[in-house]
Image (tube, rainbow, N blue to C red):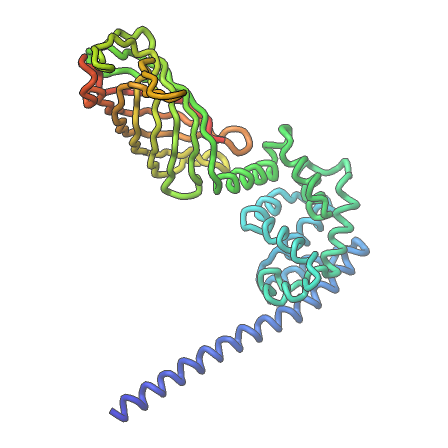
Length: 377
């Protein structure tokens, strides 16, 4: 027993020692990179200040070999390449695809805090070992400001200069302009707007047609107008709540028992309220965005407006309308449209058994196929 206890203590000591040793190694690597980055920063600031870049890439390569590749590294390369007139499209694309745009935005936000140095020390690797409000930040911002209005720049180069100069508003306004939507940055910013919007509840407006599959042909063909809410598209499971107004074309009268008599009712209008469970199955790549394929199942209630009612008190009425369940299965396709919205196309099967309501005395259709087009905002 004593041997087991001693062995356990020994293993625990070795584990703690290895963790402490690992932490020390990480701290030593960070301190080394902070020291190297300060040396690199001094050299880069000198080169940007005098716009002499004969030693630029040897210094950059030394920085990368010593510490790795971070946001300040690629930001420095992009501005140097713009100033020297070299192609920079691939670097700009990388800057957005690896998430450096978000890091730069966070860097600017944290740099405005009064305790910005604490933010830096807590995120020293994230910020690439270059302090917030550093001299490298300042000189790059100055050079970007000087070059942003140059007539020799491409759209993407000008946008990067606007971004690095600190003019976030003009950067976004120019990136979202229709004539720039095919530029690298225009696509990236639109994609980012869409991704952010997909995280929130959306409005749905739509229309569609419904056809009975049996031959009773009482309710006939109807057109629907719908409005509703849909949960976040960023989740696999999506939940919808919809109100639906269906207008029947050329319906036939049917017998409906109400107020102790059988009434002949013409079903011109049907109302529906229901919920849907959707599963975002997969997306087909369309540029930076995706066309989503989404199977769904729904449950709700339909009632036919008959216009039959009785007064039961002062301004109190009882209405008599055939009511039943609406069970549906279907599939939707969501196609990216405009900046953040989607065009939806769907096909559905519905089981709507109005004869479950015993007041309905005429056999009515129960099986329907519908098609719909909607706009997810």
